[in-house]
Image 1 (cartoon, helix red, strand yellow):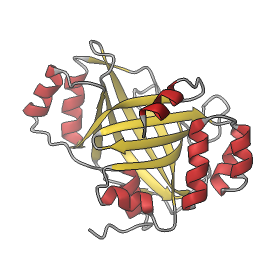
Image 2: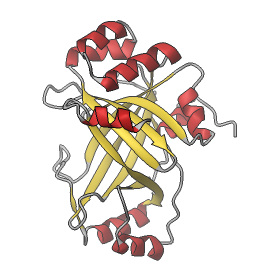
Image 3: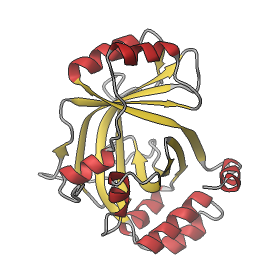
Length: 256
């Protein structure tokens, strides 16, 4: 992705951008509790509260791929520069007060470039079915994110394929505004073409009993967090909720 493109995106008020490094760690239940207690000494919850008043909040993503599962295999094969699209919201049922986003996630080596734009509710069905994408492109005008999504849709034939739900605890640093930690647990998946709707007998657990901890930063990891990593002897891993969901649902197979 060129610097010129990044600068043009940043000037658009309807597109949010997140440019950062993202490292992931897999924790069992006991270790996740211990590390969360340690993190709370230095960080605060990000303010998103779950429906039950807990500090967990709900995340739902609906991912796109094509019949060749190119996004899946690019990740499995360790391709250093790759891109994928998803729909994201924070509710399991339509809610006019909860936004729906189209998100694009690019990875170049260890650096992540994520862009998102809020969708009009009436656009959702078109993106889910793949119908009238060119018409929707006109609706979103000069939105470069939607323009790239439409091009990918047409060139690679990508369609919605799998839904991933989980609960997230997110922390922001009291001392470094560019450092963020998320703990994602109770990850579940189901084959799906739609963002909403019941999926009886299709939902499966992914990595039951485990939490994915992700640290997100633009420049450096604070020294206090380095001490946590060393204390628990944590090793960074390459893991994708999308790929785990595809495998758990029998939609793709890791041949490596």
